[in-house]
Length: 81
Image 1 (cartoon, rainbow, N blue to C red):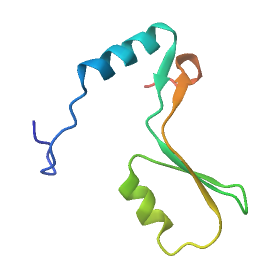
Image 2 (cartoon, helix red, strand yellow):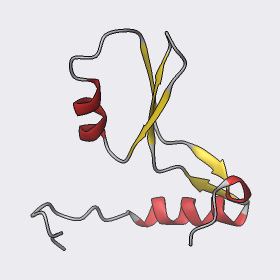
Image 3 (cartoon, rainbow, N blue to C red):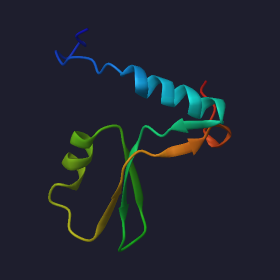
Image 4 (cartoon, one colour):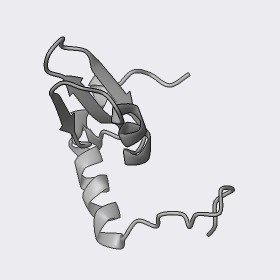
């Protein structure tokens, strides 16, 4: 499957799908965003992918903490409209 921008779509493996289903049964979901935290002033910025994050950080000074996607409780997620 090819997406509109010409990149191949990411296909989930069967094992990953099984793990995500088991986590969903427990009320946990995978967090999709990557976060960058400015350790000097405490600001948090959230991005959909690494390329967007790297573009944002290019030329910025200071100390940054980058967190990768993790697990979150489904009840803590904002409702989709």
